[in-house]
Picture 1 (tube, helix red, strand yellow):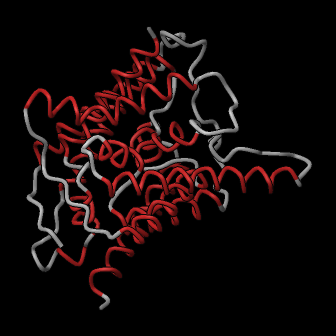
Picture 2 (tube, one colour):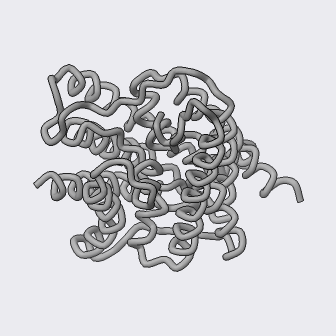
Length: 155
Length: 142
C-alpha cells in the first residue's frame, strides 16, 4: 500500500513537471538566460513553478508536521544540519553548472525519460554515475577521519 | 536556441502539483521529496530499507508522461539541444553536484525553502547563480 501511494505521489510530481513546462530543457535554459532579457527571449515561467511549488509546500508542511507521525512511517525524517560547510556551496555550484549545460535537473531528467528521449537516457545514466561517484568519494574521505559525517545526503 | 512561450498559469499550476506531491510524501512517508536524494539512494551503499518506496516514486516520475500521452493523445514540446558529449558532462556534473551539496532543485529549492532552511537558501542561490552564469557563457561568449 505504501509503495503504491509513493508511486502515485511520484506520478503527481511528474505531472507537475510536465504541466509546468520544466520537463522541457529549452524552457529551463531560456529562464536561466538573463542575456535574453534585453533580447526579449527570456522565459520567466520557471519563477512561477517555484512560486507555486513553494507556496503549496510551505502551507502543507506547516500543517503536516504538526501531526504526531506520518501515515506509513515511524517519524518524520527532516534534515537537521544548520551549518554552512564548504560542501553546501561547492556542491550546488557544480550542480548549477551541469544544470546550465543541459537544462536538466534530476526530476525533469527522469520525467524526460518517459518522453522516450534517447538524449534524456544518456543524461540520466551520466547523472547516476555522478551521484554514485560523489557518494563514493565522500565515504573515502570520511573513513580517514575519526569522527565520520559520512553521507553528504544526510542533510 | 529555441524560443519558448511564457506560460505563467500552467507553470504556477504545475508548480502547485509539485508542491502537492512534496506535501503528500511528507504526510505519508515522512520524507523530503528531494529527487537527487531519492535517485542516489537507489544505488549502494544502502543505509535503510526504503528502496522499494524510492523506486516507486522514481517510477512515477518516469511513467507520468506515458500516462499523459495515453490520456490526452499527445505530449508538450520537449527540445534537448545539447549533443551527446555535452549531455554526458552535464549529467555527471548535475549528479555529482546534487549529491555533494545534499540536494537539488526539489530538495533544496522546493522543500528546503519551504522549511525556511538557511542551508537550502544558500544552496538555491548558489545553483541559480552558477546556472545563470553557465548559460550566459554558453550563449553569449562566442
